[in-house]
Length: 525
Image (cartoon, rainbow, N blue to C red; front, top):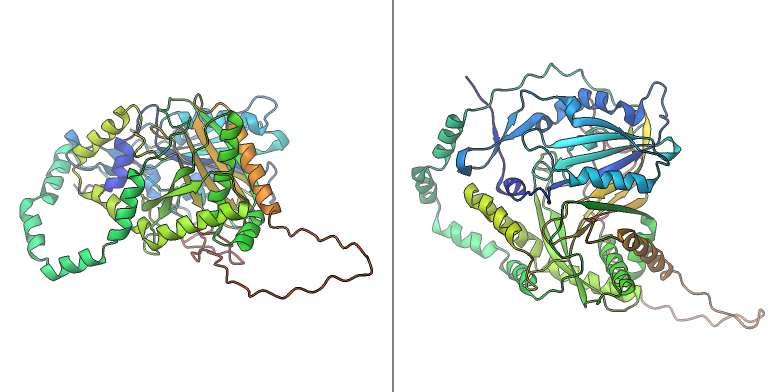
């Protein structure tokens, strides 16, 4: 009998081995939709289950579960779940009165604190009613082993349409799960893949010249800087303690144009501005709390290393850079330029490429060692000062036009990325339809005043944008005309706009539906 299975990559596997009850490794978002659909007969987000049922065949991974080999002697594999039940993965809930955003944030925090069931397909969606203004929310969770947050083919993406009228899909064939291999067959297959004879044959085919060329092309300078970034002494903050099982959520929404104004005025990219704003807000927050304000905030900024050949594939293709964002008192212009210089140096040193190269070593590590490594990492009470990273800040470009589901417009997005070990606070950023949405996820006990950090974020964006407005000169005499100044030579400004296209919803054949106008996106650090 023919069986079917798909192996996880080394990085995907790590997200499973590294998970703990107090540190579930899923990512996701809370989507908030208007309550009244704009098309006749539309059910909006309340018809989510029916929409998923019609489109689920486009993402087979969402009907698959993880099969673990005995003794972790090989990587886990994806197999079809013969007991798949859509009603388990799509749930309903209602908020108590008054159903405001604060109540929704508390509910989202409780949902994100619960680990996914690793014996089932690794995703959940909860449709939440009872919001003020008749709005409907969808809390989406998907395990990091399935997606990296930047992959465009995600179930949540497939649920969204670029027009109020839902896209039409061909009626899917009745789904039949493919038989999974037995444990014995899985071990036999893995043993053959790990055959020393096959490895020697492959090695014999490699020419020495190819080895030399590969080494010469390797980003050694980037790898060195990446290693030094982890080794340089860092300053733990009050939230860089071992996390507990409870969560706190906050969200901030600001105009994308404000960040673009700062970028145009001070140079750099929108991402540089975002990091500078986070640094400004962090410095103000720490000072207000009476905490010591260190010289820099060490931010791990994930980077997508996807190209067009991987754009529609699930799994993790991410790398990252360690950016030191200054926290010392300075003007918005100075802070943006300091960050622009730091990120420019990292890009020129190819640190992100080096990070991807280093992460690929996970592919060659035995799965047993990865399982043990996950346990060792969590067994450490605290990262040392030599390797501390303060927060993760992941920035995902989105479409600058509205999306709909069931005819109801998507109003707001709260993106969320998992906290882990000593990372008691992380920030996710998504741009959508003219706004930038900051999603803050933190340990509930370590960060009781997360809303205050959110307040400082919003204020920092406003202050940075205000700093770009030229001050009017006072003219003492209404009849006098100020002397014209000599025009200074204009300096070129690198706008740093990502040229990757944005994918909207797929059409009935599974292809893309492109926007009527090119979507504005900003680059990913």
